Image 1 (cartoon, rainbow, N blue to C red):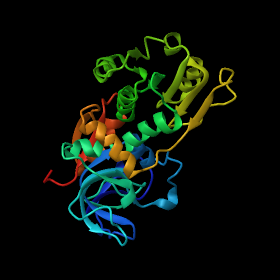
Image 2: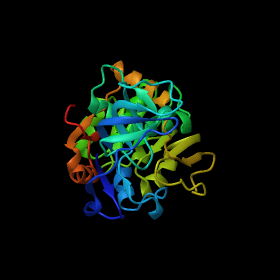
Image 3: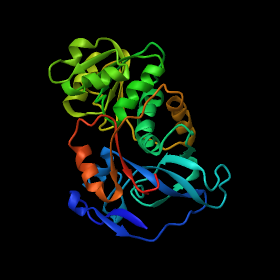
Length: 310
């Protein structure tokens, strides 16, 4: 089968389309014929050796962390899925940019009939990250005031929408050219991060979702009220910051959970949440896809078409 592989860390030049053996589903796994694969910033961070959870001893590997496709083989003990099921899910650090991928069955969910392959491929990793940031780590409740940094990207645009359907008041930062996109998602206030200081606008917030890091993160303590939470996907917030007293900071990595994906997909199926696809590339143009994603200011997700019968 065809797969996009790396044997060393580096830039786009380390990526190559290779012929490798088709994997076999092990106990508790299924083999998925990948129709579409989602791309995420973590993919080029893994490629560059900038993702702490993937070290040199994991090479060579196939890039890609989320897939949508058809079950073609069941591993021993898998009872909840059948061959021929349309499924999607987040997978480990090895295997999405390929014609076939083996995935633990419990990480997958059936795709609702209304979702096309692009939508299904764009939801899992970004959706789990947004959902877990808000619900599990952010303790989001109806009526909460939430600030989301980087609200127009893959994770951000889903976080904005999930927070709205959960009944929150949502503010989000983005570039000036992305503000109309944020408003189309239903934000209560779109903030131009270059022209406006978010800490002058947001006061006594319950939750900040940090998808940017650095100075943006450290300034975010100011917007939180007593008991507020600062949740980051990038770096652990500094609990010793002068304005962190009485507040909680955490950093997390999303976990794949099939049952959670089913719940998220329900909102998409009902038309309450949209997975926006910015661009679709064929598998052999994965380098270009990651370059496009890394250039920034992408609205929503970038996906790869793996099989042509999509």
